[in-house]
Amino acid sequence: MAQIIGVGVIGMGWMGTVHSRAYLQAADRFHESGIRPRLIICADDVETRAKEAKERFGFERYTTRWQEVIANPKVQVVNVATPNHMHLEVVRAAAASGKHIFCEKPVGKNSQETAEIERLARQVGVLTFVGYNYRWSPLVQHARQLIGEGRLGRLTHFRGRFFAGYASNPQGVLSWRFQRELSGMGVLGDLMSHVVDMGLMLAGPVKRVVGNRETFFPRRPLAMPGVGTHFTVGGGGPLGDVTNEDYASALLQFANGVQGNIEVCRVIQGHKCQFAFEIEGTEGALSWDFERMNELKVFCLDGNGSHDGYTRLVSGPAHPDHVRFNPGAGVGLGYEDLKTIEAHHFLKSVAERRQGEPGFTEALRVAEVLGAIERTCETGSWQEVTRIASRASQS
Ligand SMILES: NC(=O)c1ccc[n+]([C@@H]2O[C@H](COP(=O)([O-])OP(=O)(O)OC[C@H]3O[C@@H](n4cnc5c(N)ncnc54)[C@H](O)[C@@H]3O)[C@@H](O)[C@H]2O)c1
Figure 1 (spheres, protein in one colour):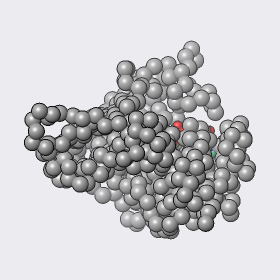
Figure 2: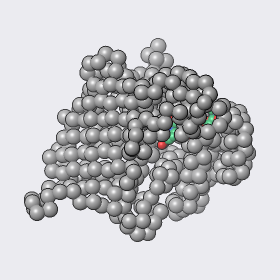
Figure 3: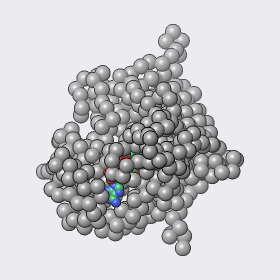
Figure 4: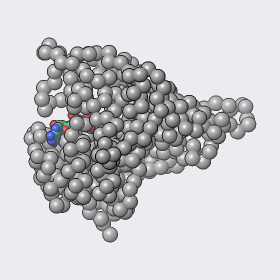
């Protein structure tokens, strides 16, 4: 029997529209699940965006006041796709109303805020989910399975990087992402959160870190309010200060002895969206790059030196969720397909009333590593990754 889940989406920019489409797609791609999201209400303080989203995706209504999404009795899950500075306030209200919550990464502007958000949801027992979408690539899931089966032997190395060129033009506008007040961390929250999530998922908990960060373009043209995205290029107008980092890197020591090396940048030339990892063990190695997300390089020692090197797999029916999109191997998936898989796993957890993964607990583990990287950037010395409790729970 079909299970209808009422959805409210807050923030109808890039992610809000992607998520709305993903809920519609999830009902189709995972049809036999019987889960039928119903788009109830969307909110954006820019009315044209809210209105257009209602028309495009078929929401029953739209509003410029996000509180109306949470107050709507038909809304069972609240999807938070606003700039980062609003996540805490929206999650607090949604949790207080007993609504399940999907929140985009980085869940909090900083580690302390993520701890507070995790506590708010846990204390009232609502289900949570987080937008670490790159996990859902069929070949990343396959990589996770290979590691889980011990095919790489004892893990030894993890390298992760997210090299994006979205701000490589110094005339790229000063959107909320570049302002600490609105975004919190810069690339640490934006890009490194994905890399750290991947590292924790594949290689386990991180023990300590040492790292560095830099802002290459300290001033940018002011953005027009309510217009454009962080890809928008301005020029000619007044400039404002960039108040968070363009670049960050760190060495990691994982608890199991894996040695890690991670690096992210939003202003790099050449690379466009290279979210990539390599992971090696005593008996094998894997290599994946989002820019070629339908390929995974695999090497497993089998004692035959004549083919001692990587094999290139292409995504196909043998890999998780591939057939939801295409019946054959080599007919690949794209970014938004990962969001559709993500939406399905979230809705399934709600339908089954069980906490899925990645939820706020996983986001807090990521935030703890990011917090340690921030500390090492201040001190220049190795920092232990420690558990963070919300200040409210300490008092
Ligand atoms: N997982 C991913 O791959 C991914 C990619 C991009 C962004 N994100 C995350 O998604 C979130 C949104 O990013 P985005 O790129 O969609 O940003 P965006 O700027 O494109 O969209 C944000 C929207 O929120 C709206 N908004 C601002 N204040 C509001 C308010 N008071 N009430 C209602 N709406 C309001 C803005 O008008 C805008 O339409 C961020 O947390 C970001 O880090 C995740």
